[in-house]
Image (cartoon, rainbow, N blue to C red; front, side, top):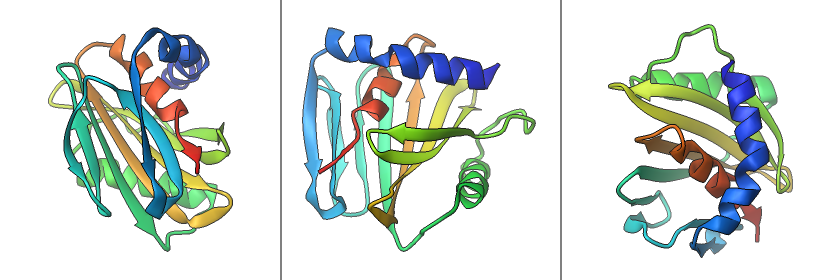
Amino acid sequence: MKKLLLFSCLIITTTVLHAQDFKLWTWSEYKVKFKTLDNFILTANNSREFKAYNSCINFEIYPRRGETQSYTGMKSTITRWASQNNLNYDGKSEPVYLENINGYRGVGLDTYSNGVPVSIFLLTDPDYPDISFYIWFSYRHTEDSNICLAILRSFTPS
């Protein structure tokens, strides 16, 4: 069920992207561009992390270098990251493979933290497989997941 929800949300995010006002960010060090809602408040933007939030969504990126991974390795890594952050998921759900997010590939996993929905993702650029992005979204309402996925779909190589 989660796979179907994540997949269907990925398809409709293009519409959401056009209905909101977004701000473009370029992270040259990691060869990536992405968008956030323009009402996000920035709390960190450095070589180790990017953090921003608004009243409904918390968005974080943790870039890493030197972690070239296969799909199987990415699945293990994201489930380990969920466990390290005490995120709850049923354990039966497998991470969802993301074959092409503007050239990126990766995995995603829907979880919870203290009853709050959290979606985490691990993306890599096939042109720079040693660069990985650990992406975290927590949100208040299910409909906010569409905005989170619109942000995820905005990731493009720069």
